Length: 329
Image 1: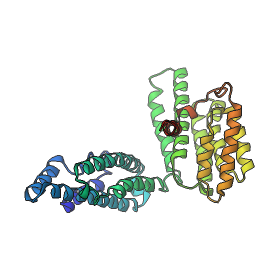
Image 2: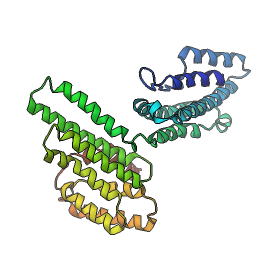
Image 3: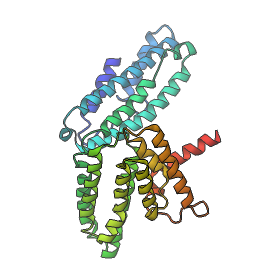
Image 4: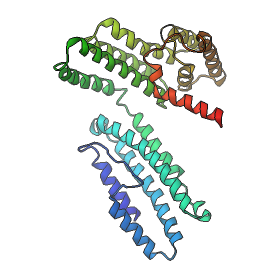
């Protein structure tokens, strides 16, 4: 039974690059079609002397199949980046994040259905976390460091803008391009704060190159001043991420607040956590000082003005909700 499911899942993984890439959404372990899974479950239930033992056996198979499936995806990631393709890699990341949510739901419903003595012998934790690990390993790919992500993005924008420009008047088109640039910056910052890899010299270099790529591309459509005004926040965050001392962190953060007064100290906290070699004492000192600087800059408890980036960054909104939940509980 495990072998049948694993083989079917691997076939889907191998064919993920064809058509719609990696559309492997494990809706409650639907790695194969529902009919086949149902037939296998019925066969186990009919041949088992006890339904509880049948459910327990099936639970173990679910766990093993998920782990086997993740192993197949890791093997896929060992292929050269050029063979995987950027679209397939992005789909793999999204699908594994979705699979994690579904695996957690599957774990909960399965364990609830088992008697306690059987439930204690089943552990879905490693299988569930495995999906997050695969997504993390996918994010660790060299695609971004090699420039494929940003360059692929602007190439896509270029084709898209050529089509859109044919159907709207010039002023509206420029506003549309400006909105696309702003959304690009928001998503870039969001991913920067969500990623788990340590910030190293090559990371900083890639960020600088990305700024140049975005500048060169968008100033072909809108004024240089507007592009510089939007892209500047990336340069500020790059300087913050590469700061070498507590004083430099607080100085750069103070400068950021001059033109992005709604940049919360959680941004500093996240970037500090991604830096290797910073003593915990210094990290706490930096975060504490930046929180104080931010609070002192508020007017009636609110930032003097709202920018176009940080209110839209989803990772920051999620952290605020988590802090509120902890207070309530």
